[in-house]
Length: 230
Image (cartoon, rainbow, N blue to C red; front, side, top):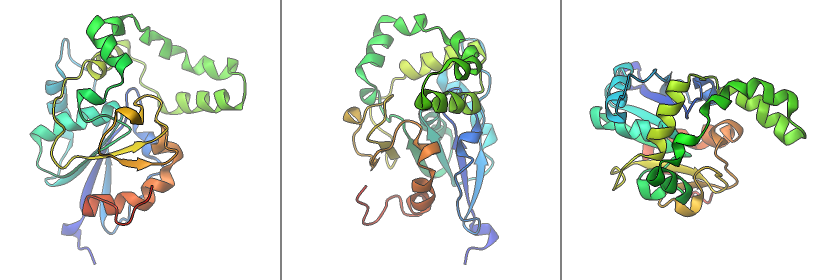
């Protein structure tokens, strides 16, 4: 049995523009884990990703915690880990070095084309549901409206720039990477050394939550899944 002092504190960082409700279906055994949901801060003027990540660390109140980040949140927790003493660092639907970014993102970073992306369009996500045609688009529109709640253009421009222009050579030692083989944002063909979720898309933290509820406790405790076949 786990005593109170043995409880493992697990901090979750959502993806770009997403709120912590993307983790609403994630359940970890309460006799072993305590979940903490991190939220995005508004970036300061010309703030670096390193400084931003250091500020976020102020919300991690426990030593030897587990830090889990999704998508751009996965990049941020890697930067946060440089300032924390962690038990485990886990990224989901993300990348662990610049080489894992898809070619289109590396090209956008090199040419500066990312600056032309109209992030203000996210302000119209509420209207998308009204004009979406077909069940798939309507369901996606509902998801976007529910989970992508951060519409501040300053934050969106900053986040997009730091995601696409992130520079990281070698992956952090002992970093655990969980990735779906159907991820449309970060294609699996660029990803190396991950735990692969068959059929998992970029939003699998939401629509494949049962997989995470089954395997995440073992990953946190052991750093791997024994006898896992995908």
